[in-house]
Image 1 (cartoon, rainbow, N blue to C red):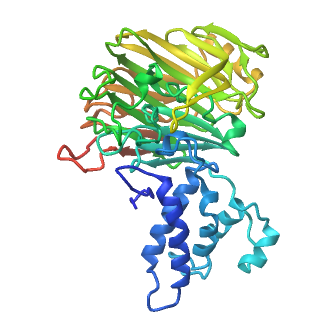
Image 2: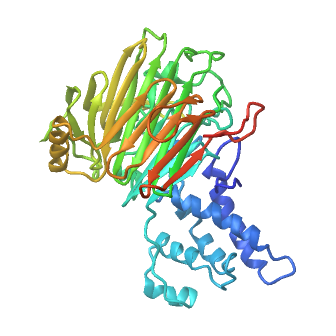
Image 3: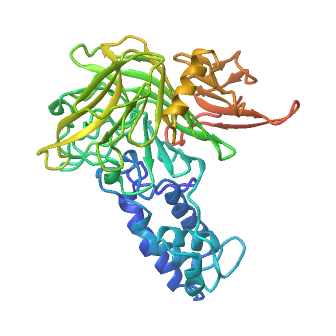
Length: 487
């Protein structure tokens, strides 16, 4: 296990192995309690850290970017729900209390038990744990988690230390883009009810990812057996400030040694996450693929019972099929009540359509009805860019007001810099400034004058004379290129 709570396996975080392991580990820890072979407080604290991290990155199942070679297998906290009870009853490893109330309350929430039932289970009256809210950094898996109310945002990248996707002989054959700066907003509940199902899923359009839209025979892994691709770049991952404000950066460089990959494909991507707002930037997007279009996907979800609605510029779209092309200043709301306001970019395509695809394991045809929106950067783009704002749990009225404010110059944030060296964003409400430094260098924006190497820095003024700051390099120190960070 990594210090950040990640369960490290195959150079990445993989719930397919860790979640079943939590079941056995927690039971063994409980059985050995008060024996000569009892697990130490430190060991129990490590297991608790990993289980509570999984609680943070499950809603109640994990996002597509964390599912490894089974992208639509809903790994989640319910897979090891009894482990919270067993580990809770071994006691709190920090205080020595005979019951770990944090784990016990989490058990009540995961199993849908009430506070009244807690007395019979734990001998104490405890309230079920509320869903997490805030931002968590898990660079042991090159991802960040932002949570607002019942929404979980999985921000997934990859780098030299952490793989992009896990592709096996008969698993995840089209999963190349799982970690291409993906930003999946997942409501709490059964993912299939919200349209995250593979029947008809376009594997080129994982939410938030920047990709070259390839035919499936080209997207299929060129390696017949296992491919767990890592980058030549050490940088990509997440940071947070005060456990509340989040920052994410992805420095993409495609491999040049594999068939069906364009080694000239590069991009710089960033996200600032503040409460219900996501600010998404892309720059320096380029490649030499002239046959197929390069895209950044805003969202993709099936048209299901809980994801049927689509709003475009104040009008509810009910016709099917539906196609529209938007431009800067336009907005839309997906079937999960997430609003997208486009500030910069090439043409934005919105569709309600029937899609055909292939199963990730059998490669047999699949089909389904979907809502999808993407920014088209064209073929063989040179220094393409984008900028858009997402409001979670929004309404048409709120998006209309946002559009009016934006047109009146009342922008809720400022982009201080956006180029190949850095993306720098200031949120006007919280006064948080985020620096995604893709290279080390000097800066004239905000209070940070220089950053010595690739890193993410966040600042927030506390008073006229004080500020809070966080700084992180996503380098796990597993290669010879590791270096110190100074700001």
